[in-house]
Image (cartoon, rainbow, N blue to C red; front, side):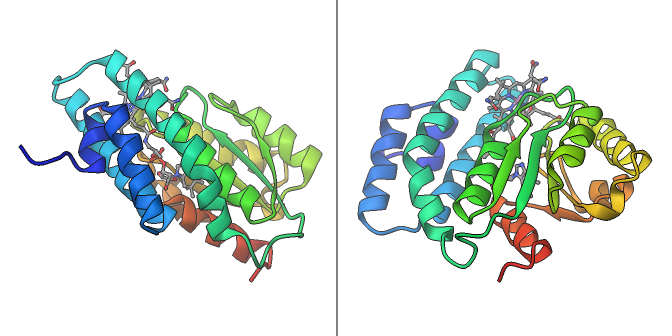
Length: 214
Ligand code: B12
């Protein structure tokens, strides 16, 4: 039988093979962002296996742990790739996973990349209620706020957060982006966000543009 690809190793929660393939790719000079894209593909397939009832919640949890271990190794390479133009500047960003959603792997990647590019990031964590976003904007005056969501059932949390920011009179002071596997252009438009980012890199580019960083 031919060897598993990196995406397959992750989708089948084979941590040892995944880590070995990542180290081999890094040693061969494959860009960290390309390796991350393969990891995401594996996590998507793990989710599809879960949806098809080929695996269960403990597998999702194990997959999440594997991905965290991978990010501990891949993270420094990712941020090295994005460092440069923005380093030294202290533009601020607030990030969080929306209320009722506890997925944090993608959100943490966005946080890591923003920090790598020189942003001061206020990371609100997961399951963040709208008023926590509002409080953080009041306190820290960021140029951009990012919401992450992986559950389609949490669309209302995105709308509620944008509405709370508007009702607090802060909407004009901050750019709002949304991302994560459940997000889309349509969600961003309907909820009143300024930007939908498919990947962490898209989010980083938008944040840099908003903060006037080339
Ligand atoms: C791992 C995982 C879990 C782990 C999470 C561990 C953790 N610490 O995060 C655990 C086990 C906790 C979990 C729980 C659940 N999960 Co889950 N989970 C997943 C899985 C397999 C992978 C998610 C992941 O980490 N992907 C890798 C990261 C890197 O990808 P990402 O988050 O999309 O991020 C990338 C981009 O989207 C972007 N990005 C992310 N955020 C942002 C934000 C901004 C602003 C920008 C610009 C970009 C950006 O940057 C990243 C890199 O480019 C997904 C499958 C999938 N299709 O996503 C299911 C999935 C999301 N889970 C699902 C479900 C149903 C659940 C549960 C309800 C299961 C249950 N019965 O309890 C619970 C919900 C708990 C809750 N209240 O939140 C469903 C959701 C279905 C839906 N339509 O809503 C999915 C899609 C699986 C499936 N196909 O059925 N899960």
